[in-house]
Structure formats: C-alpha cells, structure tokens
Amino acid sequence: MDREDFTPERIAQLARSINQRLGESIGAIEEVNDDIHVLSINAKIQAARAGVAGAGFAVVADAIRQLVSRTQGITSNLQGQVEKTLDDLMSMNETLSHRVRGQRLAQVASTAIDIVDRNLYERSCDVRWWATEDALVRALTHRTPQNLRQASRRLGVILDSYTVYLDIILCDLEGRVQANGRPDRWGSTGMDVKNSEWFLSARKTTSGTQFGFEGVHESSLVGGKPVLIYSCMVRRGGEAEGDPMGVLGIVFDWEALGTVVADRAMATLATETNRAVTVLLSYSDATVIASSDRSLRNTQLNLPEWDTLEGRKMGFFDGPGPGGKPMLSGFAVSAGFETYRTGWYALAMEDRS
Image 1: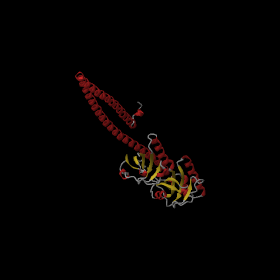
Image 2: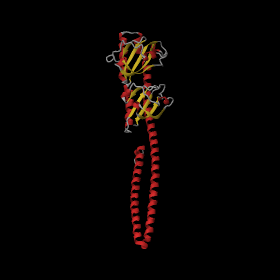
Image 3: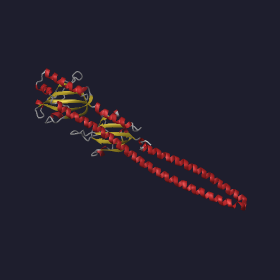
Image 4: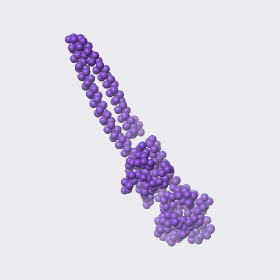
C-alpha cells in the first residue's frame, strides 16, 4: 500500500468495505441455516411417518435444529459486535479527519499571513531608506524645475527595479505633491494629500527611523487602484535626526500581494479536497482586505466565533461562515517579522455543507 493511501478517507472506505462484506457473508450463512432448518423439519416429518423405525432420525433432526439456532445466535452476536466496532472506528476516524483537516487549514493560514508580514516588512525598510536619497533632499531644499525633474527621474529608476510599486510620491510639508516616479502614467504632481492618513502619520514621526502607513484603500494617486502606502519624512541632509523637509510615499500594489497570496493558498488546498475552499486576509475587526472569493472583499465577516480568536495565535473552529454555510475554518494571526507586525488575520475556510 502506498503512503498516500494512509488517509482518513481511505480508512473510512475500508471500514465501509468490511461492513459490506460482513453483511454479505452473514446473509449467506443465514441462507444456509434456513436450508438446513427446512431439511431438519422434513427429516422430522419423515421420521414421524416411519414410526418406531424413524425415532433415531427424529433425534438427529432435533439436534440439527438446535445447531441452527445456536449458529443464528452466534452470527447475530458477531454482527452486532462488529457493527459497533466499525461504528466506533468510523466515529474516531471522523474526529481524526476533522482535527487533521482543521490543523492543515490553520497551517496554510499561518503561511499566508507570514508571507504578507515578511513582504510588508521590506516595504517599511524601503521607504526609510529611499527617504535619504540625495536627489529628493536636493529637490526639497532648492525646489527648481530641474531638481524636481531629477527627483522624478531618480524615483523612476527605483520603480524600474521594484515592480511591486505603482508609484513613489514626493510631497512638501504642506501635503502638495512635488514629484512622482511615473509622471507619464499617473499625473499626481500638484495634488493635495495633506488629509491622507499616510501623510499625516509620517508628519507625526520624530525620526527618520520611523515610518507612516495607510492600510488597504483605493487611491486617486494611481487611478483608484487598491494600494497600501508607506511613508517617511525626508529630512535635511538625509539625516535621521535632520529637520523635516517633506514626505515620501511609496504606493504598493496590494493586488499583487494580497490577492495572489489568497489565490495561491486556495489553489493549494483545492488539490486536497473536493469541497469548496476560501482563503482570505482581514483586519483584526474582521474586515476582509483580500480573498480568493472576490464577493467577500471589503465586507466585514459575521462569524460567531470571531471574538473567541483574540489571544490565540492559530487554530481552527466549526461554525457558520459567509452566507451561513457550515464551515471548518483554520486561522492564524500575524506573528510579525523582525520589527514589523501587521496584526492582521488569515483564514482558510472549507465548506462542510
């Protein structure tokens, strides 16, 4: 037997096969018993007709009838015991299968959120590094057309090497976009972003070692595409403790990470079951920010078990999922990577209808 045959489904199949074969065998024994019983009755009738000469046959017929009765008792008892044993086996197998599958779903969820954390940690590093770029400092120090064009060209060079970004934005301290890396594609120069969360959070930082952030949103900077924006103060001389001069914002393509992670995790699980599977990422308040099921995007999950997840790193639970369908759901919360932690959740949900 191959190792791949050692599965809960295969165990259940073998148990059902044993039960079926046992039933067939006991049925065959009962048919034989019936035939023997008829023969014993016929023998007793013939013995009665023979009178004294048939007395010995009558004794034999009674003995055969008693043996048939005992055999029926044995087969009935055997069938009851085996059926109970198989019922127990099936129940244990179902519990084991449920537990193994739940742990597998949780494992996939953990891998998904870990990929997101690791990837976004790099984004927080990128923005702090690029905010020290000399061309950006020079453009904000002497805001000449030539310096701003050079800053734009430099941002374009960075974008050519980092395809995960849709654009990079350079703003003054008043929140006016002074330059961007893809002016031929996104005409954001001159836009007012002073009320944007990513700009405001960067303005609150006190050192170049800190960064600002805005979660998943559709940004007018890039035609309404879903993005994350990381930000950092550009400081005089490119020094971490220099005086603030402006804000750099890097516009990360969320679809290229969130949707891809959810879709690939779902595809992996789909090869292991014939049940419908959904993988999603959410904020801690259960707002879905990416999902293999597109209809769930930007919705808030209404899961009775959600409040019980707080304080738990990963695990699985049963309960109604989206649309009220019974689901087995594996979950994992962001464990973080290095100094970065999103605090988000990943869920892998299998339809148990």
